[in-house]
Length: 596
Image (tube, rainbow, N blue to C red; front, side, top):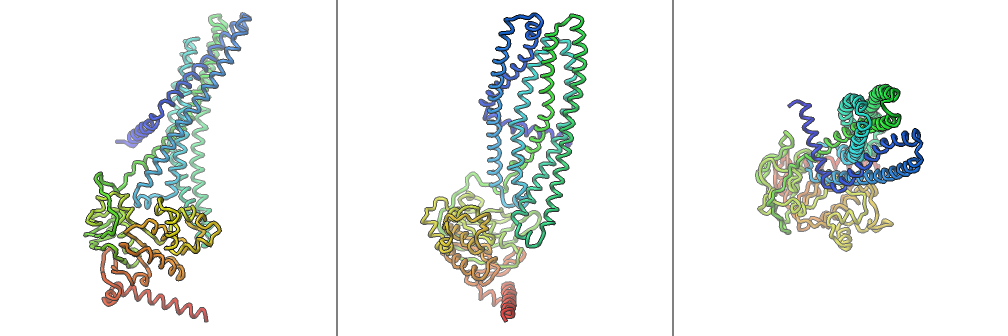
């Protein structure tokens, strides 16, 4: 299949899918179309009335027609205005409803996609799909489609009038119409291509904005404002270039249509004037025909920019459906079971995991009993975080099986599985909301007393009470108004409120200073009680009291045992321990020297 045929097939599918969205609004759509038909008929009637106005009033000087025709024209324009309002309101309702559904569907679908999808797509680009691209589709559905329908009905009504008045003149006029369609089609294809490039440029710009705004502290710390300005200016220039190319195409479409229309009108004036002079036709007939033709020219001319808007909307729709058609690798089986609450045993049986073409985990065999605390240690990039991310099915294993209480987690309902797992990560993620709502995120059904109890158990209650608004304090974007230790304790309180029997702590204290680490560690001790816990820790001092420690190197478990046992082995764990001991000793000496 050639590229052109493939694109045409894709566009036909997009047309059908948008029509599916429109179908559910057919009563309003039908009412809007009836309004459009009335508007078209009344527009045609306006041109039709030119003949009696000229011939009966100005030529024959009929006083009765002078009294009746102005009233008829006022009624005609009143009805036309009412129907214009009706079709405009109804089509906007249909368009906005469709866009709301499309936007909701897109957001909901993105939420259901696995973590691997977010690794491949920039946040700014996804934001642009939901905001910019959907707005372009809205323009197409609400305005362009409305305009095309209304103008098409108007064209049909006016064509009837010109053929009724003088079919020979009408035939001359229709010669111009096929010529007018050619630039509409050509310009439309160009606009669709340029619109796609514009939308890609906007998405790229949105991605850069998201990166620089969220990383503004680093930008300022490294004095990179000028560099980031340069990057942003390059993207705005790229967008400007595509927009100007599109503007050239849009600007050319109207003059071309004007030229073709001028040629047609010139021929008609010459031939129609000749017939009036010869006495074959009346001035009223000719001017009625000319009024209809001039009124006909306006909707025909509008078809080109409306088609350009539709082509831009189709380009945006292709990008939106590209996301909606992205399937999730994490699929829930129809007969999926629910996990029962309680202590859980987690078993890895010969587990392998591949990310793209690289095997990240190899031959993982592990059993963690209910209530046991397992620590995972190893150098960065060894596969520790990947291993724990397999438990809540953020990814699926390439080979092997993960069991919870003898249930393959692929046979368990995803919501049920994740409801049994609490997670506290190195990067404390908080939402721009109140402290209360951030804690309650762990259990939306939790009472006020439950929230307070979780805050106390996380050693967060005292500092929360120190804020003027206490639990109603808004933490800011990503918790910017709190210190690192405070943010982490809110995250611990959130996990406590969830009260999940399986707990994953992914370097939860590694980014904190010693004082904050001590406070958070006490909160974590409360959180770990009675739970099956997986602890990833960079600082080995935080894992020495674990029931068991495993060392992971290059995706394999190379050592397993308690702290003292692993030190005695003089292997990987011993090497990591000595490296940290040397670093700590060097840092202590440096601090002493500085104090002296």
